[in-house]
Image (cartoon, rainbow, N blue to C red; front, side, top):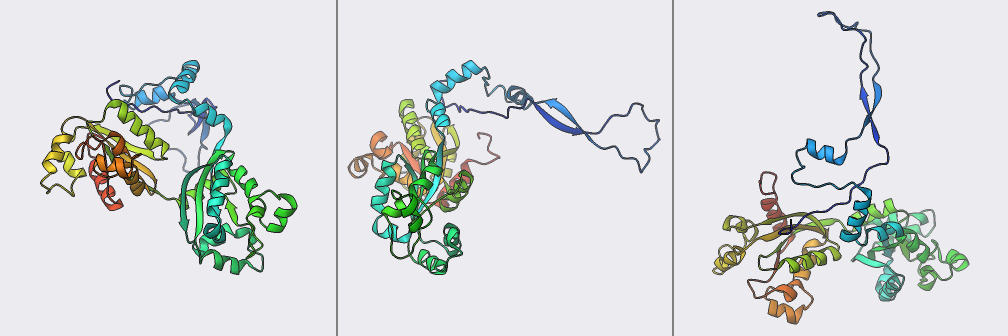
Length: 370
């Protein structure tokens, strides 16, 4: 249990202890052989109540018990959550939410940095951010509350001709807090009811509208963030020379960077396995040295998912040579954990096409090691 990674999850189900199941009613007498039911007679199905299987029972039935442990004692669960997920109860009680925020083109061009300072000072964490020229459909969506105004078409033209700035923001009660912070839909309304709002602070003379947008609800935020920040997957690898302690530190850094660890397996990279990951350099003279380093122990192979995952992971990884990384990117993983150009701690796919091919090669349904 202490030699490799375990996966720990907190799971829950609805309060109801029973589920309903549809079944046909049973007749009181058995029919004689060969006697068929009248064709016009139909018995309506009835609902019966059935106790829901426990997670342990389900795992027993699926023959998974040898690989998984379940703890459902409330006291022990509470203690384990405090140890393994120290922030869980705090985040649950404080209602941490993620919302989409959008800065109109005038703000993006002239006062973006000032707005970002306000966002930081108000306790938001910026999870993702990007500049984007909105499509007409996107502009109509974020400006929908103005669609009955005379200036609407000109507003749409302005929104689609210049860059806007889109962010995913997180904090306690994030959706409502951002909506309150930016204020009402027009500058006139904001001056009357929310004079401290961002709408007033960054009022523009081009249109009488609020220069900011925020998601209307948690459901809307989830949908909008997925649209503006579509998830992407990349291949990541932690090499054998990295110690267990260092590996845990790297995994923590990955989590803090907002990656979702979609797939993971620890494996000894034989030449056959390594060729699936390093197929671009298999013909190079130094490749035999790469194979020698990979053969020294177990590697951790992962699929990491987030918006712009390939570029973000490459940025975190840093230059190939750890000595160069220490000069150019001292906070990178290779600068911190790399020993030399071969034992440089981590590896990542160079582009999305390469990442997709490696993931397909390494994580396949037919691979018995998955």
